[in-house]
Length: 316
Image (cartoon, rainbow, N blue to C red; front, side, top):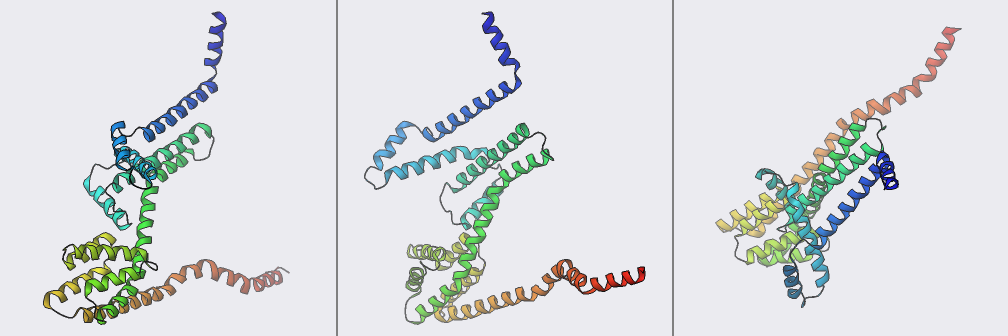
């Protein structure tokens, strides 16, 4: 008994051993928690019903894994979900603009944000325990936590801008094809469907949105409402003018082909004006690099040798 007591006192007295033991226990608990979340997010009865329902479909294993993963992420979503409805609505619109229209997209995003925050906090804790002598340690810890907290929002904003740029690049081609189809005798719905089929390879995002508009019009939604929903889904205000012009032409009985041609010309002129505006800003933007980097080097090369020779002559 005395030998056992001495061994316990020896191990308890070693602070490094205690710390390593706590790290080992925390790691085991984290692994077990993640395993339980991945394997037991729902009741066995629900899992059995889903497996029976998907027995007749191909690829039931992959769908079961995806459902299990989505349910796991949904269970983690309340950790980072905001209490205000305005912020949730803003994030939902950004997800819609990025192309994520699923019902659980919002929960999945907040779950990913929670996991990212936990990883950032864990990195900060590792820096605090294993690198206590690091310069500006507090700054590094705050930076790791901030990166883990805001990295999903930054990634979502980049996805939104990337998708909007892709759709914006395909609008001129879609308008030209739509004008050609309507002037050749096709109805507007048939022309829109043909344009969506033609743009699948070159502009798949815009083709998917136009296909959604065609399905909504076919289901009985008004054309103006369908295009307004397109503006809400993509976040591009360039299409709002087209929606209003088409609604006005259909209401007064005007020619859709002529309306589309006029809007295409106006849209092309507006794009040329935007390019000219960007080109006009280039000289102003080049002033600061010229003053900071190019002109000092030029004066050093041009006047430097003369100044050196002058100082040598005056020194003698």
